[in-house]
Image (cartoon, rainbow, N blue to C red; front, side, top):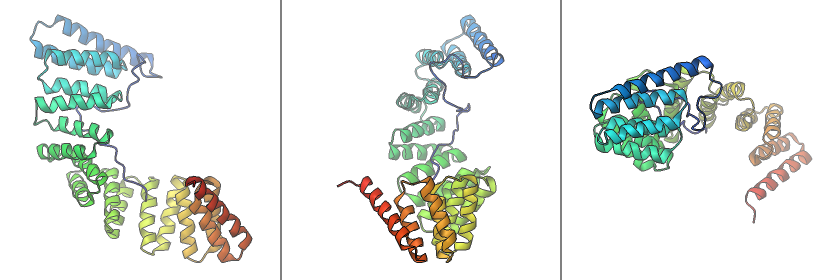
Length: 334
């Protein structure tokens, strides 16, 4: 079974995008028009901040906007310093900490982002964005139970946010609370618009609970939204194979291979389907291709040996078994 997609969904006020390169003044490959536009925005905000005769909160707001412009321009170091200045001016303002947290998050500084999101929750305990952001960072740090608590708090504060329920579902899934995950994913789906990732993860958790029909239904909904996703085709095929529905499983594995032609597991499991259906020639073809693209996978060699043995090709079968044994010994020496 392919695992669920545990990447968090973003609820921030600005898109997360791709992490900026903190060493580069502008994104690689950016056009001169993009650079000029970003530079113009930065210059405009610098003039506004310098000319501001207002109090610290207004200056902090302008600095945060300047920081986001700098981040858009690819100048992550200046963005960090600018947002840090906003924090210095208004250390009790959650919005300032959130701005600095997003800079750290987008530049891959997870621990620093977690610290800033944590300060934001202290400044504003009712900020769902802060709790969700803190949960995302905890998850990335491997603190899954703490992440789950943060997502639970965020859901209490903003029960109408599908991304937050999705993130909570992921936390439950990682902790083995599949019932909690099903509940969270179902709530996320009910809030719409539907996301294929939510349906896919719901399918994974229902499969983990042994609810085969529920898993198949969720995977089908995911495929309606994203019909070219190989992992979903593979997982629905696995459920069908476990349900002794080899014909349906064969069709789904074939679709998975169309979208991921070098997936050893797909070819190996397709061979298993053909073997169960009694078509040993087709099974041998699939297992042979599996060991060609994944010669380091012992079970593929074993399955090929089994199919050859049933066909009467005993010498070739022995060769396959020996290779499987050798690979297992290499994996577990001594």
